[in-house]
Amino acid sequence: MDVTLEERCNLGFEGRRFLREAEWMTYRRRKPVRYISKKKTEHCVECGRPETADNPLQNAHVIGFDVGVIDLALTPEYLDSDENIITAHRKTCNRASELDLIESMKRLKRLGVKDLPAFLPPTIQENWKAVQSDA
Image (cartoon, rainbow, N blue to C red; front, side, top):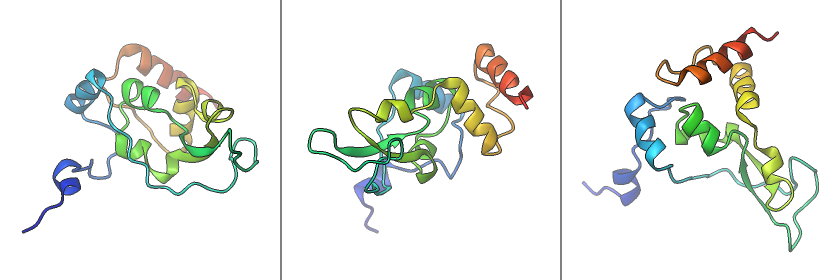
């Protein structure tokens, strides 16, 4: 049976949104590689303009890898999913499109997430409770 390199090396996360604790600890040591498959749109989601020669469009994470993996234990698979990727200008809009910790939590709440993994630090859990109690 022939198995491709990608099949041997990229087993995925069974569609899970969150990492298990051992996976999270591994990625805290070294962040994962990004594998975005979503096609870019012709206009920036942030400003609505097309790319220029000096400011091309690129895929951008709404919940970035630092907040997503390190703070919230989200799987790289989820972070690279179409639900979390938009098109933004590399120089002017990419950073602005990335949510901070609290806004990322609010997004997860809007997406129907009820609980974060129990192994996350108390400060993260406290912030999550505050976000959950906001109307």
